Amino acid sequence: MKQGTKIKNYCNECHHETWHNVLFVQTKSESNYEMSWYQDYGILQCAGCDTICFRVDSSDSESYENDEFGNWIPIVTQENYPPSNEGFGIIENIYEIPNEIRDIYNETVKSISDGCYTLAGIGLRATVEAICLHENIPGGNLDTKINRLVTNGFISKDDADKLHAIRFIGNDAAHDIKAPIKNKVIIALKIIEHLISSKYGMQDEINKYLDLPINTYDEFKIFLNKKVLNTQNTITFTLQSLIGKDRRRINNNNFPSFIQQYESEIENGQITILEDVTTQIQASQTNNTSSTQSNNTALQTSNNTTSQKIYRRKNP
Ligand SMILES: [Zn+2]
Image: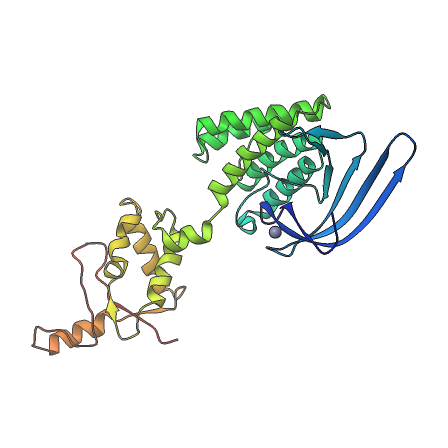
């Protein structure tokens, strides 16, 4: 390792090997009549993301191996700080993960990077506990809670089997103080990462680009308020016409009660972004003998029997 040069090193932030600038190197070496050895202490900076890390390269005069041409090549041992998390510890948009899950997950990744596999085993089990806690899953022990994640529709039976296997790793680590082997904790961590990413990751993108079903009144209210706020205050509409094609996102059993509750919240003043203009519109239609609608009114009545009230967005 030489100061001022570039070398390849794994970057924990870029999650792959990148070029690193060698900012500083201090070499320590010794020798006697039998052998010699050295250690290069280097400060490196990723050329991709500017993250700085510390690396120690060490070798001695006894550590050589042959390459395919029979040349002697020194074996250099490489240690990084922070330790490399190559192949694990990768969750995109980790800021989207609920805090209580993210914290214990990060501690578990750190334990694995540091080679503390007993602690990592306990951390993996605790991460599953944190998911149950976040999902408000009742139950005295983790065995019951994992099964309830299935009955609550949060995970499949196959996923539950994997979480039970992680529970066993955690139990062995906590009760028998038995360190799992590295491959075991890494596979378990990848299962957790897959679960966390699929349940909590990409929520911003999903909400922005996909039409998910609207299951609760609270979701319905947020959805409809957004629609209202996107209309001009010169346009009138029924709630059904405003919802339009998004009607398919709401279950038939819920739709009438959601509309009813939304309208009653408009009436009692809880929702203030809309005004009921049904009477005004009907009066103007009665006075106007022409069958055409006025230009500033995109009135669309619906044959849905839930509601025929006509609204307009209120001036801010
Ligand atoms: Zn980087």
